[in-house]
Length: 313
Image (cartoon, rainbow, N blue to C red; front, side, top):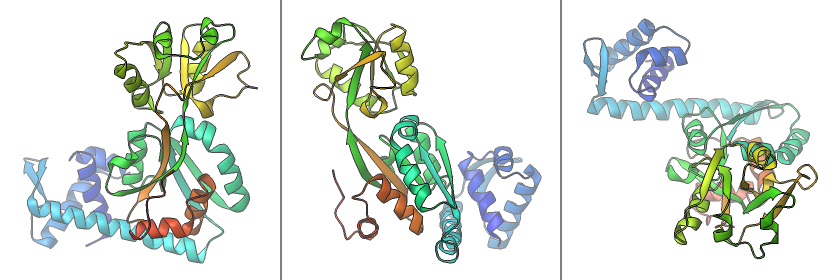
């Protein structure tokens, strides 16, 4: 039995039993993947995948047990490498972070700057996507840490910790009539075309629920995943924007005006997540504490062991 065979096995399952897609993801050939899976089944004396001709159609009951073991074995193999990075070469390594655009653009830059000053030889990789993509990348090991507002806490395999809270802002061109409406109400907002986040991003669910509770139907005329895109179209006079408060810079966004909206929409919590079975290196802990000072190494370790309370905000 070889680790490479286990990688093939897990990747085929991850790709919906599509051997060609698994081979492409692993930079190898389809016949090679099929042959190695066959050799593994022969060695174990059982059938892992159900077949119809050459096509895989399902996973057998013993195959599911083998897959679960393979996933654990690959995770532990990766942890061995991480232990080596932690103890033998603390001055070097790679930290992969999956996050959304808003976090990468507005929340993380000062954290990244301090991290690089502390660990100048650690290579950083930041990949951006939707909250569900962020969770998937952490789950499959493509990222070490995931940072998002939604989706992370839906997976039992992840330990998810709260980092900080934030609210939304309403942004308009300067001189807009809404700036005279104090206090700002949802009914007043519903009277204008709105520009805000895509349905699965940056607290959008809280925005939708606020209007629903008052039986209002907002005219959301444009959505985006990028706060800068939202502000651009607000600046063109196409509508009123609702964005994360961290995404507004009074100096850089001087053509726009901002109205506090914390009284209109629920607060949001940005969270960080990692696999529960991952060995955390020293600089993983450092990054988490730089992002959220309450996430000390002792607190994270205690939470992992089930000895500490959830570090709520």
